[in-house]
Length: 200
Image (cartoon, rainbow, N blue to C red; front, side, top):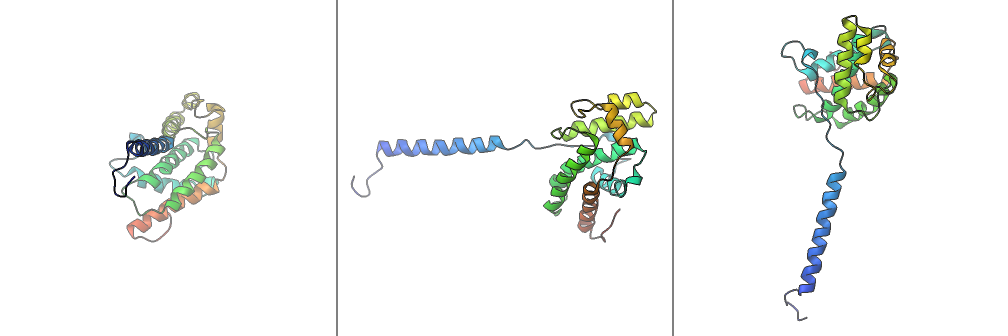
């Protein structure tokens, strides 16, 4: 072939095949990404028109400060864990707070393993069913319906059974990683607001 001559048909075909292969590899890489998680709190989680994220941060930073806060209070424990499930998704992904450090999201990921292990929640359960079932159980407990509370915690989310989960909610152990994540979320929002560090 003379210098400067147009590429041959064979070269064109080889280049096209190469580009197609690269495109297929790129699509395969995209397909391997895990699906984005979604979480929201039920309408009765926040009074009035309050911000659910701030409300959850304020509640959990107090609830997990010490084991005594939730001892013998399964309804409150269920609500607090549900709020942590929500924050574990919202804190790293909420577009209103882009300045929150990724480290806080990492803390929530580690803490989620801790509280899920403590309550017997399936490690791979999507967050939304966890949130909805815990809030349903909390409402039933407040209404004095322990059997309904156990039934609200499905085996797909609580493999050891709803009754076991209710008993664990009533005797929550100390959860240091969970407390640290709750405090980190509080500090992150305070920094966003330009306020001093500390619990809400």
